[in-house]
Image (cartoon, rainbow, N blue to C red):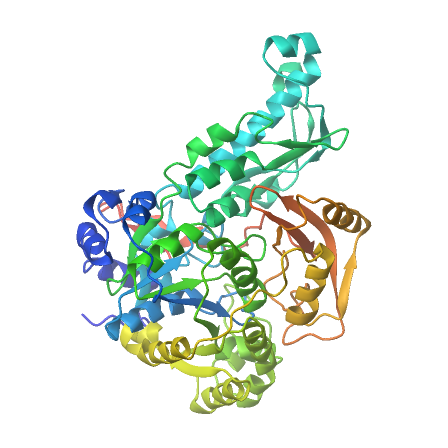
Amino acid sequence: MKLDPRVLKGWQIAEALEARMKPLSVLAGETGLSGDELIPMGRRVGKVDYARAMARLPDKPDTRYVDVTAITPTPLGEGKTTTTLGLVQGLGRLGRRVIGTIRQPSGGPTFNIKGSAAGGGLSQCLPMTEFSIRLTGDIDSITNAHNLAMVALTARMQHEFNYDDERLARSGLRRLDIDPGRVQMKWAVDFSAQALRNITIGKGGKMDGFRMDSGFQISVSSELMAILAVARDLRDLRERIGRIVVAYSKSGAEVTAGDLEVAGAMTAWLVEAINPNLLQTSEGQPVLVHAGPFANMAIGQSSVIADRLACRLADYVVTESGFGADIGFEKFWNLKCRYSGLKPDAAVVVATVRALKMHGGGPAVHPGAQLDKAYTSGNPSLVEAGCANLLAHIAIVKRSGLKPVVCLNQFHTDTDDEVAVVRKAAEGAGADFACSDHWLKGGEGAVELAECVEGACRAGGDFKPLFADGTPLRKRIETIARELYGADGVTYSDEAAAKAAQIEADPAARDMGTCMVKTHLSLSHDPDRKGRPTGWELPVSDILVYKGAGFVVPVAGAIKLMPGTSSDPAFRRIDVDTGTGKVTGLF
């Protein structure tokens, strides 16, 4: 049966493709894993015992390492995961031994606007249902470990409030004197639950906890997810968890997970989660799925563990960074590669005619609404105007020392004239260019892209960090804002300025990385400013400190760590066939 994505829905194609999936043991063997390195987690998904595999496998210095990023997307997304999987399939069609490394989707987007992030059309990550819902429980483990820290904190606050020092000592506790106004964590849940952003806890009597303001953040924005993404092994994970700053005392001293004596128990929740998950593309290439999304509010990368393992198993490793090059690629470049020690050989910038038209002045794009006619009919001049955004992302990748490959993720409504405009702009800016029709044709449609990426890898580059270790925090923020975002400068709230000065004066914090938080819908902090905004300054409203993950988090603009659910969420269309138990309606 011919599978036509123009006619069938994503979950229907996935259901048909899953009938052709390789058995898990066959997939593991073809990936290069030995029998005791595969941990089956059901019939179709497994985990990889990375410690065993890394101990057995030698370094493979000739592996080509490729990152996939994008231009500033529409709210619908521009198919970056689809392109990542399509490139893996395209390299497979060329006979290359290739592994994809991608992030696990969050329940928030899956049941809200964006859907499952499993790819699309004939370039998907299978099995789709397991990938999209729970997988092997990694995000559940992150949620539980995170909330255990909050349980430890709030219980300690209750006991310190109700007990004198003598009674605390009998329980083996010392008074931490926690400041309720300087609690750094919130509770976690992996849904877009705006009603939980701000809550009051501890209502009732003295045995019902300590009464104070609190709230929830989405699980994948937890510092624990960042730690899972950057840790190199279990020992490193355990040490980083112990350094998490949960709160501050009334005298300003840090109160860490180690101080609360909860770090070991938090790590216990993550013993299995540290192992990457093994899935496959719709054409049977291996995909390691590990760590979480949201590069606008988190690091937004697949894990260092998964990428380092993949580099020992394959000739090509294709990874993906969240959102555009201003956010995801910048964090891949200056955070993830710093932690992993890996250097990429090429970077792919995904673009669509649809997004370029939006940046060129086209009508607003709204999830769930029918696209304006401007997006489904030829308009090369609108595309040309929008290429200013593409050029900005090309410049960001070139600033890293890599030659970018621009991939036009082709839609069937794109005209030849529109494609020619994008090709001219990309090549004129010094990038290689390829059209890719992987959504419609799978690996066959991505061969041009795969050949282009191979050429970029052979050409090589001079990949270097944006700033040297020890660069003062505000200098780093200004460099990112000016050189990558195109801002004229940076402004700070009084609170952010005070925190920046404190961080710059702290020798232990001086060399930490910088993980920017801002909207993914614009190069600026304002989601409504499309194209390549000029004449603006980046407003930093707050700076968070993630000492466990090893970076500081400057927050720019009105960004929240808990997204909201829309009026037309995806969960309205998701159901279960009660005869077969199969989930329907995912996209």
